[in-house]
Length: 322
Image 1 (cartoon, rainbow, N blue to C red):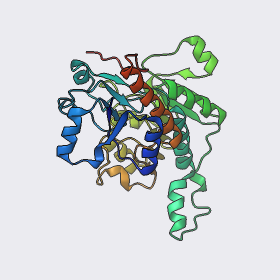
Image 2 (cartoon, one colour; image 1 turned 45 degrees about the vertical axis):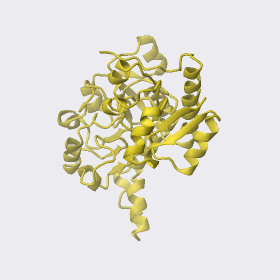
Image 3 (cartoon, rainbow, N blue to C red; image 1 turned 90 degrees about the horizontal axis):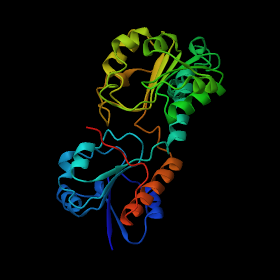
Image 4 (cartoon, rainbow, N blue to C red; image 1 turned 180 degrees about the horizontal axis):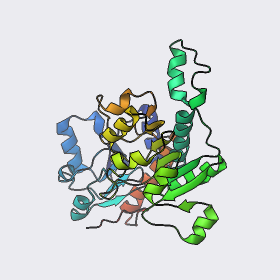
């Protein structure tokens, strides 16, 4: 038996080594980026499994995937997969919900600390020969004693809240689904409406999926509520923040800074107005992307493939709602 698996993301030799570690002799991994267009279509027609992190799995692409049994997402958010098209074609979809949470949480605080201490900006200045030992101290802050507004209190949001409290911050949260009073008390966090959270928080971080209800959730009105000393961190999905409105707020010094890991269009366009600001930390969708997380998600991905081959239910199946 030869199980054919298409891996859609760009893969270094190290990544290919990890993929080989978790695959088995009866599995053939086809690297999408190695193929020309004609070969891509040929391989799609023969593939049994599709593995993607951020590559768009569209209805058009799936029309060629006549033998595919499972689309495996190596991450949580499945907004890059046309779930309805997959469902109509009888193709299962699974993700690795929460597996890269530690990586995302650590990245969140790396970004907060970089914005609060201007580490990314001072790194560039120091390397260019400028010694700014005192000039920025009056606009640098500690997390301790601040109010952290966590938007989205799922698996990652809860871990962010816990770590923020260890830094000495007070945590407010907003979510479409409020926790029970008992859990709020246990976690020592307080629910606030979105507007109230934005007006009170010194730090705002986003940990929600991109849905019709969350698209442009943070736009001109919401940004106007934030403190001029507040920082905003997006490690969830592009499209939740209106990037032009954020650029306007930064241009008019209505925020201290922002860290953007996920973008409305990826790769981010070179003319994106956010890229010009020294107080914007811009990263290429890497918050969940450590070797540790990759090892974990690929182990689950290949276990799911084996389960499907053995007619067992894969873990973390994604339900499709119409």
